[in-house]
Image (cartoon, one colour):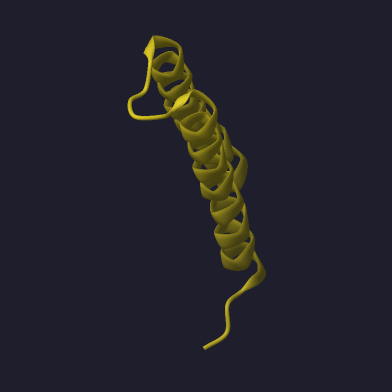
Length: 65
């Protein structure tokens, strides 16, 4: 089964975006974590989720063109 160029590009861009989100989540967990996540870490986690949603929307618009 061969993938055309457009499908391969969509896969690569999506994997990179999800990998960045996972890396940000792990970084926040190790930097602000411990036995529990404080208010600053919670805010950072919410910000990373919001940025991920915005990033995926931008990626979707970019890939649809």
